[in-house]
Image (cartoon, helix red, strand yellow):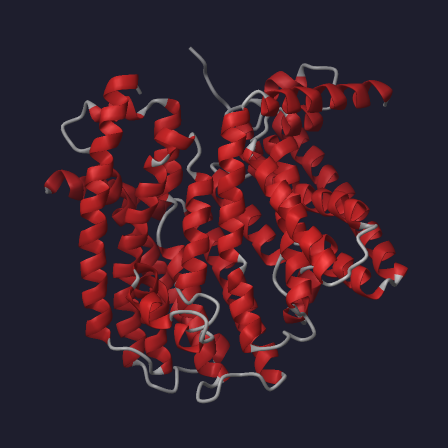
Length: 260
Length: 261
């Protein structure tokens, strides 16, 4: 386990040293959160806001949803480059599985983002929206805890997209496809509880995307149960890990047959 | 000038030859691009089933905005992918080889590489715009001009932000983050950008000239909007190019010291 810890530690040091990347990421987050909250401000101003959810709470929902996308590093880009350049062949010779090495690096980088976004990001939302959500401060912390789980699942999905490069020679468009599904089924633009009747909301709530983004954030508008979401994250996390491991074995076979 | 245009045409020809040589990959990526955007668009259906409009911005605006933004993304990725990798080229000292050529450095650096995934995005974007045109009876006469203008704005935006790489090391990841969100925000409803954000969308991140104002023109047929967008596009392009050459001067003066063994 120690070797994984050291990879995570090195990634942590690398990310925390690159202040420019961190600053850009945070500024872009603030802009996107500002824009999404602005969109709901316009909707509420024209009298179409959802009954029972204040603009203030909807602002918190949007701010937390947007935060999730900025917590995880872009791990699929690293894997995409490794596969395309053939560098993966060098990593495979090491006495550590490539898959888990990259995941531990991702978690190390994630930790840096968690520190920055959970302090400055929450401070930004608090100041911009003028206080805690009406349900109180405890659900904010509950949502943040669940965001950590959601981000780890997001990393697993990213690794899966990155390994797709073996077949497609470009992970970006697989990742974009995954992100689009996330936008639709994750409750990114509006809470899943507000989806129209033609969307199967009960089914959507059981999928991993909802448990990663929409469901944790919905705690701030008084929807959902912390333990149920956590349970769903554990089940999906374990399932995706197992499937990812199988997929990785298939990829390894491809490297052995065709070279790096 | 004539020589530069011939050089530009030669570079574009090579790009298209390279793209057309990988038909299988293009088809696969085109299908994926189509599926990606087909998955995404129901998000707006869901949104507009909840509220009939966002400050006057309706589903037809969303179709046009999204179509223009991804078509512009496709054009830039297909023809000027080098712009996106500019921070990397600067870090690796790759501009040195272009400096020795008699042709403009910017042209060489921008058109030196392409990604054929851009073709899929371009076709899907045009598909969205065409669909909106037929469904909502929108006059599409000016769409080609709007796509060219939008691509110039987007390319200029990439150039402007990428040029910070002359002064900032390892700027590539940050720049990618900015380009992606630049394009993402251009498909967001115009009425949500108010106050300081309205100013930003008309100055340093001019998504207003890329989608918001051209769409206003398409909907209202008032040529003042088209004129405003054209002036804004030209001004921003000049500004971005000037900023790049300012950075290039810094680069030429040996800003990075390296030893090659």
